[in-house]
Length: 298
Image (cartoon, rainbow, N blue to C red; front, side, top):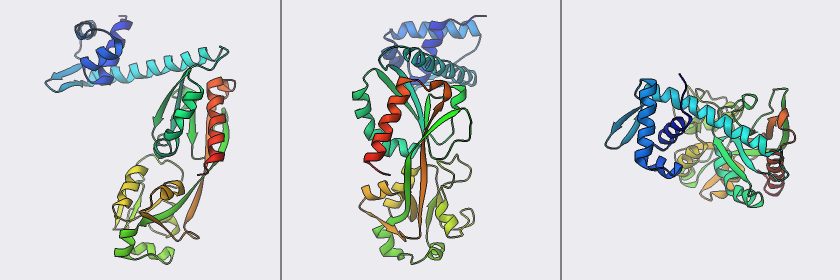
């Protein structure tokens, strides 16, 4: 049985958008045309792909499986398109990068408009998550990683370091007191990263380690796999958290604690497969990141 390419494109657009309306806008087709494509795909496969209800569409179990497969197919096509564009004189095409969520959303995102203005032919996509995507398997073109990669077939360029400190809101310190030593952290509410979730770097709970505290035993803790959520919790006066210095400095309600003893530095690397060594898109972003790191130390 062969699968019609147009029907698969229609299914993918609907599944990603969650409605026929948004999918029709994206594909520039009528809703009735897309509806017929989906119905035809379901008939040819002999399965139901969506549960339809008044509030929208929900993928069935079989629909989820097809969506995951289609997502992988379209991502591969996007990467191949980018590699084909690298044979041209000018830099153009899709550039898919993966980066830890907190760096991508706080430090990198505000700087990207300048990169895209300098390189209008590049269509940039970012996957913000702490899970390590496999560059060798084409899950992304390049990555910004917070540890030294071990794979031998990856090119790596150290961009610099992110410096971390522990901090808390002024309200929290007024109510609970300011720790005078690392041992005092045992008497405070601590915010950290859950062991069950992928970590943005090798030691996300370094402040627990320095104070010889087990985050799974310590009674007063919030463990969450989002640096932005940790920041917001600290801003609301919940407790003490380890954050990058640049985030602390951008938030005047936060105060560093034990700045001489409680600090950590994490190396930042730009990583991409050996086969992309001559990619104009990847090298342009590399040079841009090097320049940004030199201007705005982390």
